[in-house]
Amino acid sequence: MALTKEELLKPIWHAFTALDVDKSGKVSKSQLKVLSHNLCTLLNVPHDPVALEEHFRDDDEGPVSNQGYMPYLNKFILDKVQGDFDKVEFYRMCWTLCAKKHLNRGPLCISEDSAFKVWCIFNFLSDEKYPLTIVPEEMEYFLKKLAEAMGSGWQQALFEDYKIGLHNKPSGLSVWELIDLIGSGQFSKGTDFTTVSMAINEVFNELVLDVLKQGYLWKKGHKRKNWTERWFVLKPNVLSYYVSEDLKDKKGDVTLDPNCCVESLPDRDGKKCLFLVKCVDKSYEISASDKKKRQEWIQSIQTVVNLRKMGIPSPHKDARQKRKAIRQKLQAEQEELQQRMKDLQMSNETKHQELEMMRTQLRDAAARATEEEKKRHETHMELQDRFREELEREQMIRQEMEEQVAQKSSELEQYLKRVRELEQMYHRLQEALDDEKQARVEEESARLLQARLLEQEAAKRAMLEKLHHEQEIAIKMTEAEKRELETIREMKDIALQEAMQQLEQLEKERIEALEQYQQIKDNLEVATSKTRSWKDKVAQHEGLIRLIQPGSKNPVFITNWGPASFTQGELEERERNWQGKKNTGAD
Image (tube, rainbow, N blue to C red; front, side, top):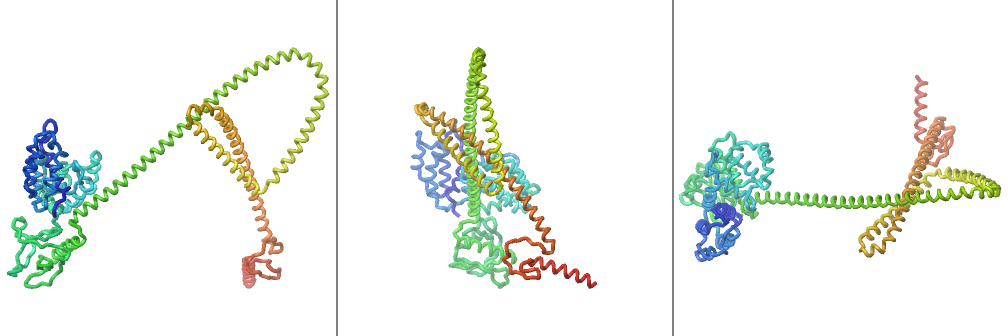
């Protein structure tokens, strides 16, 4: 399968970042020329010395960084790649440049060739974000494949413990950290060196080289009709066969397209476990060592044909894209959740600021009230001083007033008589008021009173909100308008205080109405309880006395007691009692 430009860029990025830089942070032009020449050679891209010299000319506009080298790399190398090159050799060249500088030369339980294959697998699984890293999900996928290839069980708990230690690396591990992790043997304890190398090679063949299945099979020749054992390698678009598993001597390819099909054949010519691969131009008869392997090969080849029909180039690339899409979706959901939390936090902060502003306003109002109280106290003290002075003056003229007392005595007696009359009138009015309160015993009247009080309370609250809104509008006015409206605002403050007092009075009235309603309800419950008790007593007198109630909608029963004297339930109860007495008498 041909590599995409993004897949080519990953190993080139490793090679480029491994180049030496001078003190100013620039890469020498000779190194870039050597790297470009090697890339052209391995990717089978025609050399263009003129363009190379023009791009790397000796002036300040030459490439001194990755950004400066990328235009030349895209235009003169990557855009001209056709796909007919040795992918492994291309990887090997980039690996040689970067491993020389970054590979840990300490003791590792894997060979350098295995480290190279881990490096290739890293490039396949990493996202197209530079610097390249492998996220924990892809790392887990790789380690699971490795454990499966080694034949050991997957240690999920061990990986979770290791994953907790990656909290300071949310973006994942670099390729050299991954190689050190595999080489440390942390996830392959108890496994020998050869098994680990073979497992890495198997995962490398599967993910990097797109080898879906490989093994020895017998193939029937087209000319001589003889059977020869070959090493078959199945990839997403072709089934290749070699002389041996070293893949040095390739004997042919079976191109798999949507028109191909595979089917099993009966045993013949002394061969068992046969199956046939039909292509448009040719068919291939192949023999497996047993029925299980034949079925595995048939399923694998049919899977490749189905993938070709669906237009999926590689199952592993498709699976990687799906995993990436899932990660991006989860990340988008997490970012959306974080944004919502941020918006909620900002909303809470705004509400808190508004609350603090209201508290400040209340403190200012309290301070103003305290100041007014202080002024009222001072005014009261002044009035007391004035009253004292007036009292002294009154003492001086008391003698004059004593003469007038005699004249006022008769007036006082008349006044007292009038007071007694008013008191008697007050008592009569009080009795009339008590009679009026007792008349309010109906539940509906209490409810209407409560509803009216609530409506008045709501109206007062609306008026308060309106006054508060008008105060906010008045605050936002210009300084000149504030001076003009200061008098109006003071009047509104007085009106607001009066409305608050009225609201408190309404609240008290509502509470009293609720208490009256509760008392009425309790009286109704007591009356209902007494009525129910009385009905029960009447019902026990064998129907001699019966309450007058609305007629039932059910059919009327006529007995010797008269029509509708008993209900159906009472008749049934009386019949059961009569049957019980009859049985007792028979015994």
